[in-house]
Image (tube, rainbow, N blue to C red):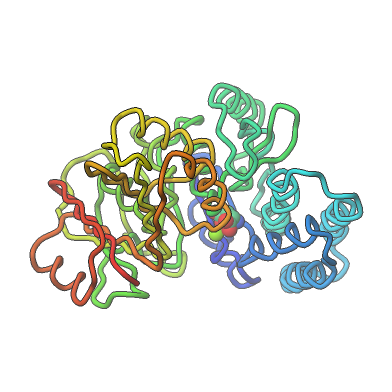
Length: 417
Ligand code: ASP
Ligand code: MG
């Protein structure tokens, strides 16, 4: 068994879908293939807008039309006019319209997941129908019946036991060589939809690979592999041909957007290799990520933008002790604020976090009684893995440093934007 994952950019128009079909055609061999697909292009962003407007009781018809037009125009280039698939496509939009006609519930995250999941339902239905029409026999399965989560909407926590048994059962009963499913979405025990967090399709692929004891996972991207830095911000970037799981986790965790950070752990636990390859140039080697330790220690650097440093001081000017830390962490955990970097001194505790206005506003009142809270905004968190003097100087040139942390292999610096 192998697992392939195609992201939104790889299925953004009819040409791209045809390209995916070509890649699948050349890769169907004796191994079974489980294919995980994201929503087409920027569909998830559009569905997010629809979910927000619906929840705030603002009209959604413009975005809804945009969504329909986008998908129908892709399909016009993939199917003949009278293909019976158009009815199936139409039915997905009817399902969405039914949701939008109801009064929204109270929980935005719940509402969000029931709407936003439809991007992946649309893309996979389109691709499955297209593959079957072109003679590549494949079976469509609803990922909500395979990946089971708790009811943390927008950030579903995987229930590994039931996911394992549902997935194994399905793949044992079904004998198709090629099985196609959605990334990003899961289902609760009550059959509501959850999502796994933005860009979560990579994680879906890893979850399924884990459950199926897959030989390898291939993530198809619009870049030639994992690069040592984001070419949008740095020149002279290069492909890292071989990475360890550990290095990849570090890079992804600190903001390299090439792979979703949660993807690696399930693969590492079963020693499943991960390849990142270009869907534009499938013949290129790409990046191999596995458990071997032969990786060269080439410096990589990642910039996480839109950061805030929050400094917390006990109001009574006492030292920061374990009691304070435990109280502060409890607040962060309760409000699901992720700490990207932290540092304590005698009288303060500082955290670098994403500038998420809503979450920050929820955290402040819970700390205000016992602590003075100060902010430093418009910051970036720069992480250099395998730093050396040369990269340190060039990456941090002209930057005003706010916080700095150094370990043997990783240098992290919070700087002004
Ligand atoms: N479609 C989802 C998103 O855009 C999941 C993914 O692409 O991985 O976040
Ligand atoms: Mg995506």
